[in-house]
Image (cartoon, rainbow, N blue to C red):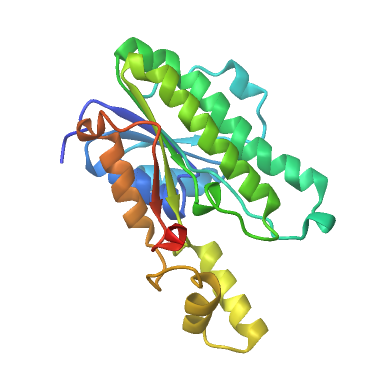
Length: 248
């Protein structure tokens, strides 16, 4: 596919998991992709694989991002982390760190990219949110707060960017088969003394109608479509990929 031929893309958290899948998908569609990640070695490996570029960047260090000029046609805000703890025990510094990485950094990257997109009359902002951008779960206060904020950032970007040919959307996956989730499944299986499939069906996907994990490539496929010319009228939207969790 060459529908994104001549386009450039930046994918944050692009060295593994959903980000790496998105980088591969956009490259397969013809874009020149910059893989941005704090892990320089892993980012370079993915970039070399897809014939792209790599950008070693710590997005929690936001001061340099305030001065950044980002010449890209497509921006995928994917980088993020999780921390699980009751509110009463949640470390304030960890809460602040997650907001910096998952709200302030996407804002600054969008701010840096919009002038180029406005000049080109084309832009795609794709924010990898979560079902937790629409629903809450206990013990994930920082993550849920950040993803709800990302939803608002995306919608404001859609309203301001529309007249300039720029769209902004969120993708809201449920549990995705990534190393982080796989480890969580194994840990819970040991803790509860049950099988891993039982953990998936009865713990992680308790509220889902479809009892399987989402694959990173499925998220990436939607990213590819949202980046394409076919999605030019899609903006300000939140696409759930949660197996029916949010239908309740």
